Image (cartoon, rainbow, N blue to C red; front, side, top):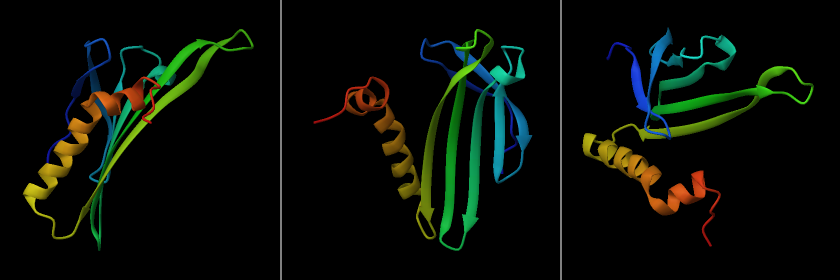
Length: 125
């Protein structure tokens, strides 16, 4: 079992963002980017790990609150972008099979066609 430490990820402009552990359990660990200095504006990562009779389910969630001027004229969160990746690893799957699944998911998110549909509002036809 790995100890939770800071996670550094590049954003869309290739700027490294540091997410520090906020709450840590084997089943659910939360990380936050505290750079805004305001809790409501913290960007968050959540890593989930769950075992059951069928195998293991793991996941990553990202939440990016966008702060700005509300229709009322007050400042606040105007929207939150969310992303979720979930991996289902049936009991008995091999290390090589898990590596293949991870590679396909990871590389699939970087594929131009998939990226166009998921990020750039360019659906496939």
